[in-house]
Image (cartoon, rainbow, N blue to C red; front, side):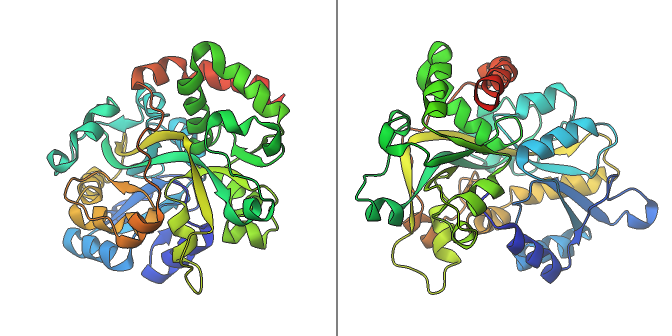
Length: 359
């Protein structure tokens, strides 16, 4: 999920000695490199230095990370390189795109050790066929509290609110064809308004001035006025499609830390997302890839994850940090959709959305 600034990830990679792979081709592609394992992922993967070092010490594998853009872009690249993958494990395919990756034969099925410790709803929800559920979260519209307080305007609460005149030209979202949260938001509207109503909803949203950008980094850290990055970039959109767990990010990285998060969540605009990892078919280091998958659902990794990637762990015994609980927003009734319906409808919905919104 995309809730960590790219700059902080780059700094972390340098600090813990990760090798940032920038060229195409597998990171485990020769015998001299057989003791490394390459993780292909989106730009927002993160893990604590000590947690990663513990895995490297226990397994004997050096972890190499290839960040491949927004989750949607990374999945597209994985499909294009299937059979000759850029790495050994892919992390970041979610329930909105999982069937596409599976149908294209991207993964070699593997049942990770410890999968029985993962809550059953995550193991069953994706029809995962051997990929490993790693985290969950809710894609929701976030709002800039200061903007709405200054304007003496109540922030929106629901999908219906977003098309009202008082919110004209305020929302930025991501391209559904290239971005995981962008696609999740479209699926949320399809779940809410049905096959017959979602396109009419988007016509209203377009008429109300929604702005579309390629990915989450641009939307949240450049266009959104409520984030630290957006303030620096002079972003002028006080509404953005992001995550229910985004507000804790703004608290954790602020100096000094505020008593209240500067951003809020419109809980009536949420869609439940589950992220998976899988062993890439054709991986050069299959054994190392399996060890890495086992690690990603271990209690140590799952406990670390909430304040590294700002997502919910899927392991039943994992701890959720106080800051995450205090400033994150609980969504009791997110929109959801059966995996089969996503698989059956996704491509035609994206094509219709593109024609309707971008042309």
